[in-house]
Image (cartoon, rainbow, N blue to C red; front, top):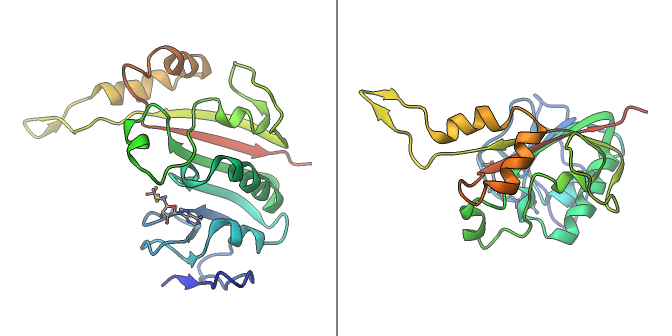
Length: 213
Ligand SMILES: C[S@@+](CC[C@H](N)C(=O)[O-])C[C@H]1O[C@@H](n2cnc3c(N)ncnc32)[C@H](O)[C@@H]1O
């Protein structure tokens, strides 16, 4: 059962026994990463703490979290609040901590069908928030968070259906693209630049490490 927190109070809610609160799954809805504490404002079945993410983060002491995971949540945060939220990630993360973010890519048509989506993401979005990046293209660093390194970016392709022949699943163009395009930074950057208008990228995943010292 989710622990409810009143919006007026920012005290830390008590956690389920199985978790120590060092691994957070923000905006988890009904899918929680195993071993992670599910935080969500809604009533999804995976929610451990029912609370606004920003309010929950603000209730935590600095350097109290080892890993933050969020899937299909940050696109719901207004662009100008996103940077503030990421600074809050940084405040609560321990040195050596990790962030993994998965969001819809801007070429995903479903991204634009959802009126609750506020912020769009491309391959390079987190390069702007990190002072080091594994990508080749250099971007301005005026929003970079000191000590953040973008260590990995992956694209996710998804087929509309799951074709089968005599009960056997057939490979799809999306499954091939997942293998081929994710071989390295160059193929990822070139696919977005020249081909995502022909075959949309469903989602993009970023892994960020916070420096140890
Ligand atoms: C598209 S769902 C994704 C759910 C799940 N992560 C998944 O991958 O299926 C977005 C989730 O973000 C939650 N959410 C949106 N804004 C929030 C906020 N400010 N604080 C907490 N949760 C929020 C919603 O309640 C919803 O469960």
